[in-house]
Length: 77
Image (tube, rainbow, N blue to C red):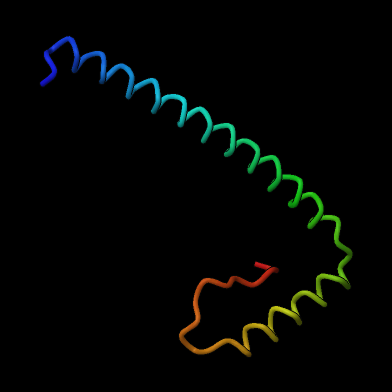
């Protein structure tokens, strides 16, 4: 059984591991934000006639989904 000193060392080690995981998660989230901002710029540059095409695709997809299907959002939303 660990003594007080052992538990403190173990807690410090666990904190260091958790901190490393959080730093990695933060890095991944920043990369995701950059990718989403890039996608947003691309989408904003889509010509209007192409947007109409995507709205038609959304309608077709929505109309062919089972009534209880969830999770798919229209591209234009």
